[in-house]
Amino acid sequence: MRLVAAAIALLAPLTASGQWWITDYGFDQTSLSGKGAVVAVIDTGIDDSHPDLQGTVLSGRDFSGAGAPDGTAPVGPAGYHGTMVASLIAGQGSAGGVRGVAPEAKLLALSIGVGVQGADTDLQIAQAIRWAVDEGADVINISLSRNSKSWPKSWDEAFSYAFENDVVLVASSGNRVGESANPTAPATIPGVVAVGGLAKDKSGAELASTTGIALAVTAPAEDLMGSFPGGEVRKWSGSSAAAPLVSGLLALMVEADPKASANDLIQRLIATTTDLGEPGFDAIYGFGAINPKSAVESKLTASQNPLGSLEQWIKLYRAGNSEPEASIKTPDLPEQVTSTEQEVRAVATKSDLSASNAVSWWSNPLLYWVLAPLALLLWFALRSRQGKKQS
Image (cartoon, rainbow, N blue to C red; front, side, top):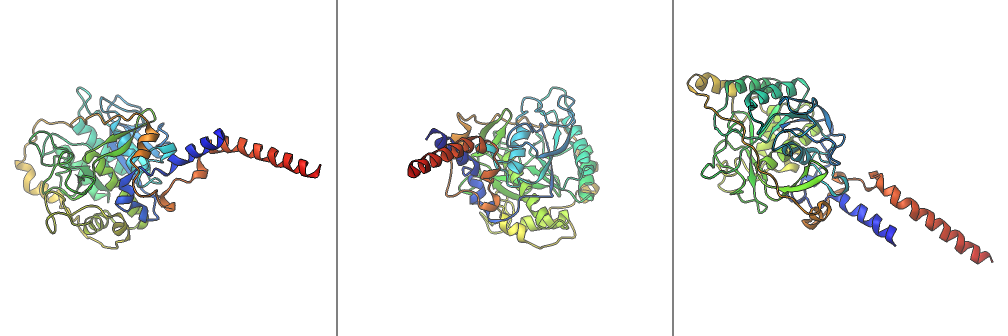
């Protein structure tokens, strides 16, 4: 009986049913997994030894000078951040962990020195963008915010390089800090998909996200789970968590239509949103909340970036735009949970992932260590019973 109970306990967490955003937003209504898409995560490094992220990192590089050469070591006081971001994109949901919305997408791990004294994070982000583009990224996720609406000139060239090479750039809008409620760079850069946050009831996440005309779309940003270095899972909120859900959705869209241009993908993303708040575009929800099923099914095209032209902005405004002293903000530490498995399962909502998006129970090797003794015991029991009948 103990072996049977152990087998049940092993199987139960694999469905990752606690991730309400997957069912509530319809990620489970697609048959896609992000296969063939490459998403670059410019952040504090990705701990690819975490059970949820093993095998997901295609390659990487450290630009901080303080991490692993391939970007797979947490860097700085917020070293956990990149791992949490990565898990929402491509987490494997191992043994009750976090299941990403595009679990078969491949990641590029690019670590920068957020919170590291003396680190030139502006330069590091510019370098990381160029490297990601050259390494074949389809989407670049930057769940980081500068403490300024403006950005350095080095970003003009780096972001333009990405746009010119047909790469979608996704950035978190930033979180409210005191009276500061407006998006900051890189979310303010024309052409970037700036992601704002939504509460679980789909209202504006008042404490978790900024608002403003720079917003493109909104996504879940309250009470999410993320993989934490050291094999943990922690709860977090904020636009930093909303952005990777959008990057993961874009990976699904790349899989659905590998020939779609970056402009096509952005057009499909914003045109298929669920309108919230005031009709049409507004400063709280942007074009609306993401709608994964409609987005992956869309066939819309666009000859130009629907979110504006950085090249045009540079021509009109760069000469008179100053570069104030600013840096990337250090994210807050997420909430610790007492038990990874219990926490993920306790917040379970109405259903598990669909078969197309669920972790296959038979793929867990630990399962066989549990079931093998059961099979042996069953064989002996049947032989014993058969021997009694013959006697």
